[in-house]
Length: 253
Image 1: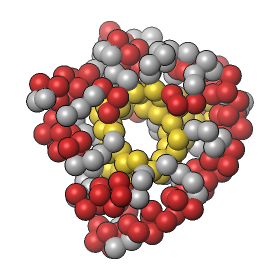
Image 2 (image 1 turned 180 degrees about the horizontal axis):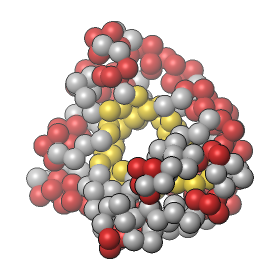
Image 3 (image 1 turned 90 degrees about the vertical axis):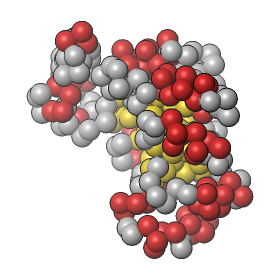
């Protein structure tokens, strides 16, 4: 039913290790997870760092705004001990540091959290990495950022992040799935990455598969739900427990 590249480690193995750190990402590779999802933002000195929130408070206890802070200032923060004392000393990694960890059979899914100002630097860093274009995918909620990214870097797969259940009443967007498909195709994007809520049912999945588009689901930690989604055509499952979920799904084969 499932192979390992269907499973994507959400910010690394974030259930067990501090999210978006080298520890979390390396743990995913050690557990033979094929794909890791990370978040990127641009610092005030034009460096790309791997962090989800617009500031550092939740993961460090000290509030620094990413876009107003230098890389050297961010590197001074301990972003591991909030999870457990054994992770004390973990630092915010740069995108370059993370890319250097990706194995030859691995994939990295990069969520763009900054605006389009980050794109030139992003192109520079991924083109200078040792990774093949098939190993890198880009995702974002902001469709205009994805549009510009695809124009600048057409060789990479790009998926539009959507949270349909919360953005509007689901029944309104249900009637607009044809619009979403048309929009994606008009921008030459490759698919959608959808929150695994009530909108993500068989008919919704089938519409995107019939259109020849990829469809991923986030964030799924339940094996029963993950199995159902994969059986009904979802191409990728993003989860906080990638190694464990892969094992649980393998048992059901």
